[in-house]
Amino acid sequence: MKLFNKYKFSDKGQTLGGILSVLMGIASIAIFCYGIYLSFLAHGNAGLEVGSIGLLSLMLSVMGTFLGLISFKERDKFYTLSKVGSLMCGIFTVLLISICFLSI
Image (tube, rainbow, N blue to C red):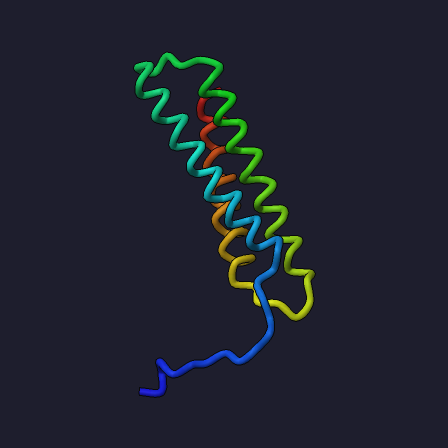
């Protein structure tokens, strides 16, 4: 039963870039879901509003990916949120770019 008795006695913290990357990823997904909601309300004819919301979501996810990857340079920190944020924003960036190319 020693599997669950893992203690961390350290004064390390999470990286600032990792925290910002996770927050940008969550904001990007939330904004994208709001754009889908607006498009659903307009029966698919939302126009520039939904397009600008989609581009805002893409920019946030690209910046989140960049910040998450840059945060690995910080010394003596935990990198859990950096990994989560980089992966989440990176996958969402690829998804949004593929949606943009499919719509052209």
